[in-house]
Length: 556
Image 1: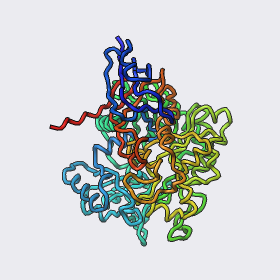
Image 2 (image 1 turned 90 degrees about the vertical axis):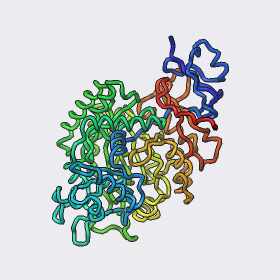
Image 3 (image 1 turned 120 degrees about the horizontal axis):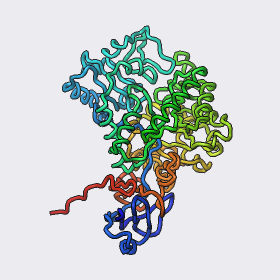
Image 4 (image 1 turned 135 degrees about the vertical axis):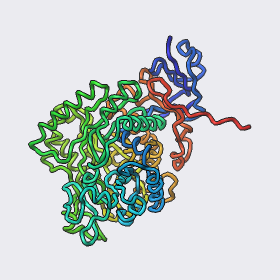
């Protein structure tokens, strides 16, 4: 008895090109044939098949998200999520409503937007008005800063005498008193006090996150931080639980977090622990053969590592901001030593790099690897926001994949109000050079970075093609760096599947794993401005339908 699925009346697309035919036949989890729907339906192996009517929508390989925080996103979505509240008043109203029914010791949530606050830094006084004496910790949308109230500052003992940690900054007033915003490593001064999630909460959060991704057509992903970070605990035991019980059937992997405080002397012990954790996770079906190295912060709070100082009021930053070039979390000697040691143990390198100096350092770390190690695994650099043009061709030369988070490559409030002013005209023109990467022959992949941005791939693809936020009438951001729809969709499908080592999926071809999607429409048939209206109406994982949008009722 075979298990068959027939998808009919679709527009078939794979790996950058339209395919002949309008139907896909899947048998026992594998694509058996592509072609004419009537001909496939008449085959013996199609007998009794479940039939999906694509109704003229695009049928394409499923998405793979090469950089996502599924557990974190799920937990935030089922908790105090203020990401849909724009403006300080709306955000505080959401917090007040939550606080009114909350009986725990801490108010914890996230998703506020920096562009809603002067300088991107909300105040403890504003949060005090709706939380009172209950300590509150709210991470921002990009997860590189936190808004805390006065009770939280008191609980952590943070006052004017508290020094900034090496990997972060406490926002202060003119007299040096903390104002309520903590950047980067300064978040941990408070996050270490947060109550731990229960096992049930962790499982519910990860399950909610996985369900959201599957509904969006994402059947494979890499958890971009596996370890204790920013108040969130290591998700690997929860992944193991869900995988072993069959509650999670997606193709998942994780990147083990490299702590920022590692020293040259501590590298051997670090690597030994990473190997131990990788082996433990593999025994439970969770692949953690990648490491995550966060090289720098983000541009909007001036912690991304730049080669030259940030601009403040049109001038180079002064001594009160270090050397004014942001934060590189690792010295080059430590970065190179960690990269070489983990690569020698068979790990892939997954770098976070936002600033041009961080991108250069990450590429240099790969270039310093022995040639045999360099090509052993598929190394990648995520975000790649500000890239020195001299570094663009190095990605292809070194075999480093560009891991794009394309939703950010547009003129939105954060870009216009917080980022471009501190970068200046010359560096602002180096942002998100996607088309330049393509022309230089670099391998392209995509990820969402959810919950920093939406998990819906079609929204990111829209920006990659138009360089405009969905629904926006603002001018495109550096339109010469736009990708074609074929290239962008290929990056989020075949490109990301390949990066994650899933060579048997990411394409529609006979013999490939049947991981595929049906879209609500054919985005190639409409205007680029309509790409974001596309949605996933059916998701197939290993030949099994794991999401199917309910049909709209017929008119009365």
